[in-house]
Image (tube, rainbow, N blue to C red):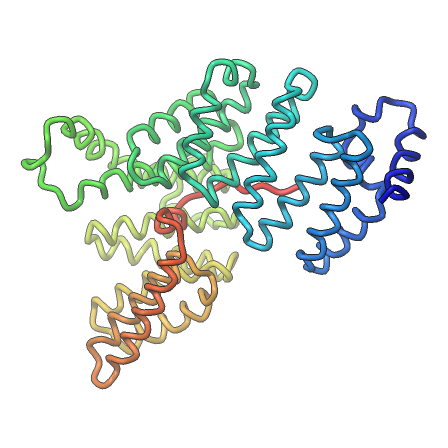
Length: 395
């Protein structure tokens, strides 16, 4: 270890600038251990890469650069490796440490701190929504909020609004955050804001699906009225998001017959179809599903599964059972191993179809059991996440 520290120190003393001010990558890349870790990551040997990155951090720390950019740079790569292994709690702790390191030296590293904030928030949106809500409260404290750039404030509103949707209870607040984000003009991110706003407007009315307006407590009357009124804007906002994804001059409609190319448009198309299905507007649902099917076949076959599952649901309802079974088997093949809402939807659809067929009740039970097992392994927000654009982070 002493030899490694001396080697690292030689690199540090050879540069003319203050080593603490150097770009993290420049110092980290001087370590053979870091190069080896990157090669292991390339080969997807994540467990060994994790060990090498820990060694890098130990060398950097013992050389006197704990919490400086070089250390945080390696720690960021470590978090990526931990995420790749689905060690989400470890990943969160690594990213939280980076935030603490830059927060303790905020005046020196304001840009790095904002980047660390954003990375941690994005990770929480994937693996820990309750923590995402707590983190938003922290970021909205005046001492933090007032030190942020306006561009990052827009991001925080979008992240917070998305977290509130995922949580599944605070749709009114979610819509407020996303509306405020739009007022701030998020530029190229407007497409994602409109899409997630549409999801909030859609899910908000779902919250009252099983409740009669007459039975609502007085304190929910305003929220119910708001949900009912703004639900009418959900489909137009999905259409607006497609317009922005594709760079069209007007909102996308089926009648416009415009060619769609951006892979991000597919989720909006399928969501619109699902809304029509919930409203029992079957013909409209079929039109949007046909459009989505054509889009995915031409642009993104790997993500066609949920669309196929919804088509099979309609075919089953129309008693076209053989055709429905063929489609749902295709969907399950594509969705196998995704372990998300779309796979669960496909399994439930197939189980329901088999349940009414002679001598196939056992298969049906197996499908239901598999869906239940997958659902039990997922966080409580899994059903909503498949409909949303959730920002991700990388290097």
